[in-house]
Length: 201
Image (tube, rainbow, N blue to C red; front, top):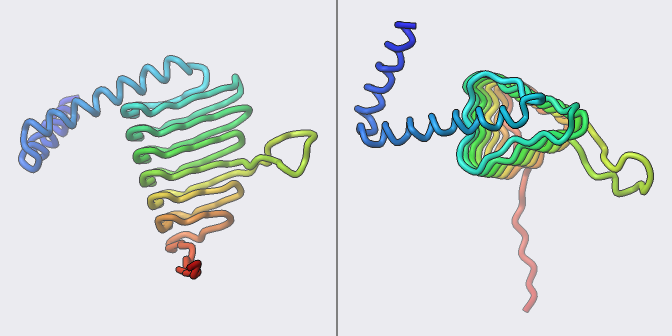
């Protein structure tokens, strides 16, 4: 316990030197409020969420809309503002320790999504493990597939990750990419984009 307190004090002193005392207090107050919000969210969905300490910043929400939905959140997961995480039906969402999710991200899970430890997700990322079955008017209206994101992955802004996708450890997904299929470990993935101009006048 003493070693933990010593580490906290050392970190706060170092932060104060870099940011200034006032901004260090503001930042850590924001973190504390995020941890309290996460705790309240966990109380609301106490049957669905299994977690250690994590932070849920302003206007972010985690929702479970089925008694079968399961959400596992590792320690020190940090979810910034305006993120929407929804798990429905028999969906299983697993986020390992120290995952970072930035502003305005959307995660929709009805089957299985796994995010490995130390993975960082930039703003406006969308992760969906299902599509709407627009070809059939009968049966299940969703087509489901697993998404597995490895450890220490960096996902750039405005990325869309679709069902049946596996991203290997240490991969980097370039901003604006649409990802479906296998991304090998230790690679940079990007969609090639070409400019085109069509004269209309």
